[in-house]
Length: 279
Image (cartoon, rainbow, N blue to C red):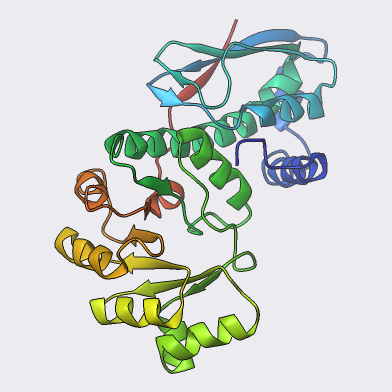
């Protein structure tokens, strides 16, 4: 996912929700303190090293309150910038700019935080041949944006939701009765995108034999990952997951797995520090 993922209608709905919880019936501070005809110019500045994501949302956010405001970008999504870098400048009605400020900053700080953490993981596995994946561990309502941010950081998007790929996990296997029965059910439904989560080497053997299209090797240490890879022998892609952090991902990648998925990219990435400084 490299194109901005939200349609115009989805962007409008996002802004509706954001403004409803923040502005609601009106910004009482601006309405009582700022003259109605006041204008100002503000620059959005990076205050730490970061990878940017979410900037396309800023224009519709500010223009929702001031359709005639002018906006100039000095950087773009996917750019890695240093502290002090000017990201964008807005000029318009002071009340509108001040009322929209927090919404614009919140989403860019959050998404840039995801992109920044993602880039750190991507850098850690550079040269190994492994590809970093995101997961479904996203804030409800922000999945498209969260996954877009990981793509800006250099990761590849995993399945978007439960609807676009079969992933047979331990609970599915428990209810179905076995790996073989679970895979057979998916195949009977005509699916050819069947991934099976494996906790043991025996499950790896069962999944390969049953005809899985890929494996999710869950919480396996590097030595065990190598054994699993030997069993698969390149027949289908293998993804490692669980226990992955910046200190462990390199050794996991060096086992030869094709993919490594990291939930914390979207689940717990810290927001970056960005300021909107008014002239």
